[in-house]
Image 1 (cartoon, rainbow, N blue to C red):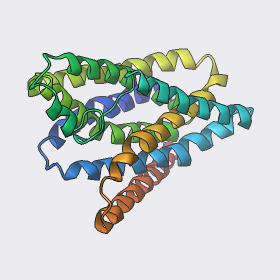
Image 2: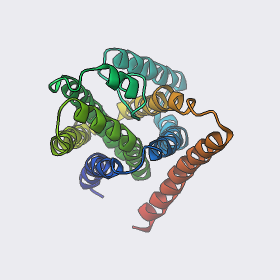
Image 3: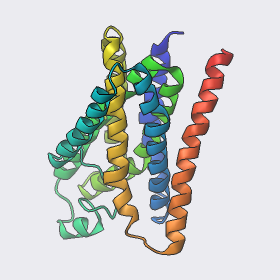
Length: 264
């Protein structure tokens, strides 16, 4: 099977479709945003621990080197976030770009913050595309699951990006077009990853380790802290249920992809 069409399709689904879903999600009530975030957390953690890391362990020559790569990846994402190259806002109440922060700023900043978030999102999407390509090169099922997990966490993230772009002075149409353009970087990263990673198969498990560290970091460092703002028993139970649903969906998607792969 030629993997390139599958990689391009998966990266398009993970990038462009997530932006379209996020644009629709903008019309939903604010209360729905934590629901999407909780589900995205489960999808990210499920993909990292049930699919990505196990496949990386099967391919790696050294478990110590693989573990060190995961640790280095988490540290790298922390540094990138500190440098505002990996700054994501998943709800309108987040610390950096939340409603309080927005209220404290002028009515709009003539596009400056919107441009910053677009540049950061483009870098993020490019790296996501490389991750998707690395996953497909190891295993078709893993590629499907990785693309799904990326799309799941892109939806709440893109919603936050929309809010920042609108506050920065962009119209809804301009905000949608900027997000679509930044999402094309995912396809570019996926195609380049396919051609550059295929000749050096030995690096794939370590690329997967970096992918897993990114999923873990986004879920644990960026998304979960926001859930702790709602401590009521009902909301806690709802969050736990949705996280579990996200994990279950990843497991089901992996099983279906595995059956489809062997059926064809």
